[in-house]
Image (cartoon, rainbow, N blue to C red; front, side):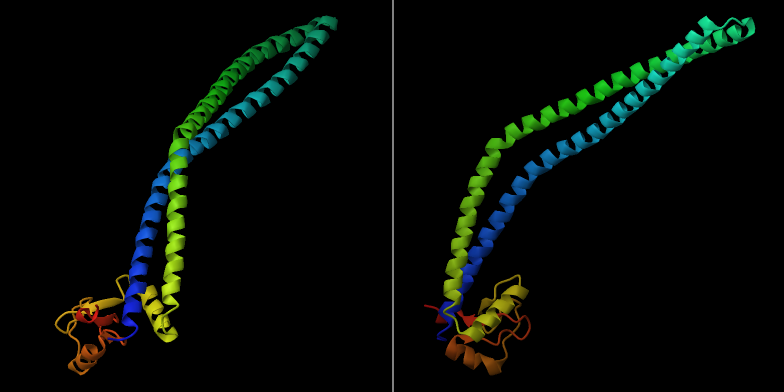
Length: 238
């Protein structure tokens, strides 16, 4: 039996364990992401509602400023009307005052509408913010559980990586480089057993010129000519 076969199988077993832990970690992160999606959805609602409320508040304030100016001008017209002694000019001023009064009434009505809308929009923001606070409270227990589970899983993963590194350090350097290169390019396992002189990864027949060495050493480091997997004899593993 090739002296590195047990070491390679041990490293591969640890890589299998790492892959399993990584999948569990990814699944847990995906679960937690669902909580974030719910939070982000409400945050987007708050952003949109706040923008709308700000726009209504701006229009309300602009209308209020416009009203103040119009009221000031109207007061000046009244003063001039009271002081005017020319009947023709007084009549014209009276017409101006009446027209301005009508315009002011319309502007005040518009301001009241905008003020009500701004209040409604502001209340909507407050309501959505309350929903967000309630969601945070609702998720707090789940997030605490996720944090605990993630910490435990990460600790397992770190320990498994350390064990894998220790096992891999026992390999011949050239062999380790080859194994790691194959590992980075293959989604399936690197070491695969042969069955009746066939690679069980891609079911390609092993050339007769290599079968003798495989039977003698229990390992073909050169790998399968078709898929590149390192082939070993199952019966050579005790």
